[in-house]
Each structure stands twice: as C-alpha cells, then as structure tokens.
Amino acid sequence: MKFALDVDDGNAITGWVAPDNQLAVSRVRVTVEGRPVLEVSATEIDPGIRANGWHATGQCRFIINEGNLPGISEIRDLEIHDADTNVLIHRRSSRSDFCEKKLIFINASIKQESSLLESLYPHFESSYFNINKLSEEILSNMLGNPYSKSRLFAGPILIPRYEGEYDFGNVLSALLVEDPFVEMARRMLWLRARTALAEDDAQSWRLGDLIEAVRFAADFDYDDIKSLKRFFRMLPEEAYRLLFNPLTRVLATRLPDDRIFPANSIIAVEVLSRFGIVGHRNHYDAFAATVFDQLGIVAQPPSSPPIPTEILAFAERLRGIKAAVDFLVFDEVISRSVQEAVARNWTG
Figure 1 (tube, rainbow, N blue to C red):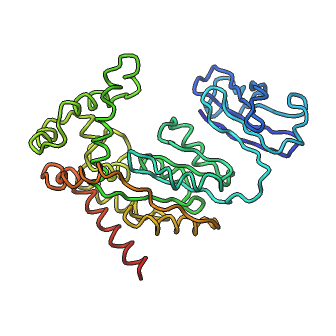
Figure 2: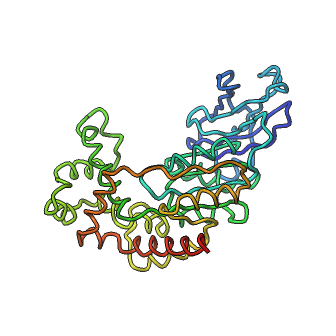
C-alpha cells in the first residue's frame, strides 16, 4: 500500500491511497474528535499512479469537502485512516505547538520502550508504533515522504533494509542499546510466557513462525544450569534467530532469516555511527534528556523504568554459561563500547 496527502487547506482535503490489491478501490475513514463520521471511497483516477504500476486503474484519489463533510472548515481535530489497514493517513489538530521534526526510534528489544514513547507521543502530530508490523510498502512510503512533518516512528526494524528510505538530514534517528544478557533473559522469558498461547489451537497462529520456539522453550528449566546448557545445544532455527546477537541483526541484516557472520559486526558499527543519538540502558536518563533536547521539547524526560528482578537474576545466570556468551559476542562488544562512550561523554 502507498499513500500521500496532497493538501488540507481547511476547506478541502485531497490525497490518494493505492491499496495492495491493485484492482480494489481504496476507502478512507474520517473521525472527528475520536468519533467516526464518514467513509469515503476513491473516485478520481490518477494516470501517474497507474503509470508507476501502483494500481491497475489509478482510481485512488479521494476528496473530502463541504459536499460530503459539512462544516469541514470549522473542524479543528480530525483524523483520516485507511479503512482496510487502519493506517493513519492524515491528522488535523487545533494544536500549534507540535515538535516540527521527525524521529525514528529503533527499539532493538523484544519489549517496546513504552515510557519514552508515552512521553514523546503528545509532542508529535502523528505517531506510528510497531512499525515493524507494517508492510514494506507502507513503511517505505511513510519514511520517505519529504512533505510530512512532526512524525514519530518507533519499532524494531532492520536498518539496512530501510536506511535508504529516509534522509538523515530530515529525520532524527535514535537507538537505545540494552545489556545483551538482560535482553537475552527477557527474550527467553518472553518465550516461556507464551506457552499457554502455543497450546491454544484457536490462538496459536498469533505466534507466527515462533510457535515452535515457544513449544521448545516450555520443555526446559531455566533455573537449572544443565537444562540451560542443553537448551542452547538444541535450539530450533526460529529460537536461534531470536536469541543470536539480536542487536547486530537489527543493525546489519536486511532479512529476518539472514545468517549473521563476523562481517556483520563491522556493518553494525558502521550503521550505528550514522545514528543521530545512541544511548545505553545503564545511562537511560542521559539518553532521554538528549532526545528531548535534540527535538527541542521543553518538558521533563521520563526516568528509567525498573527492570524486573526476575530478568536481572536470570541475566546473571546466563553470563556464566559459555553457550550464552558465545551467542552474544558481537552484541556484547557493541554494548560495552556504547556504554563506555556514553559514560565518558556524559560525565565529561
């Protein structure tokens, strides 16, 4: 799916949506102050869209004006979503104090960084979370749109696949590096927490290709060192990809099933050097303060959310297992380097 907004001059809003189904007629849903008030189908044909191969007929353009939305010029808070995917196409707001920048926050952890995102959300006109769940076409279109302002993007996308879609001069990129063993503990406990879901025939599809990894993890005792050593020897492919140097995977691969080699660690460092802001979880306050400062947001940054003691204790157990150490050799080098650099620069 591709989309773009042409104009919102107060009296009319025009744009286009080219759905993935090239024969379908796109529809947009309009909400006013959170209430659905209108659904509009594309009525106009755009020869350029058809010529680019984005749609079979080019019937993708929509218009919203006094004819289908009376009083549109007086409406101050309005949103337009694609009716099929619910992707936000446009937002009109009565506020004028939004941050006039775009931020892409890459979250390499399996757990979304909710504290920082919740604090940033009110300062952006439009926000898109879990961008890794969007189709490649939608994400590329949103990241590469040079006309959009005040946008917040967040999620664990594979950087080399999308880095060319956005201009680093126009987008502030930020990455928070985790302690690799804490992140491994978090991911392994995440697998165990979904055992019941994997056993539910009606719901197990939600796990996607991780269903076998979840079933595999359920057979091991994380409190027993021998069981953990056996866990790493017998890992199925899906679990291996989830646990093997996940930060390096985000920074240096283009596809989820790409193998990671020593050369990827070099690529990861090169990609990391192009980020606007790189922080470390152990210096969370410094990272959050820098993000707010670079965006020009005058507000109190959030404090570091506590890491559950269960995760911290499990991480310490994993540090003593050679197989776990070998799984994180690239991520550990990156994490240690970032932590040392942040500590040195932040303390002066």
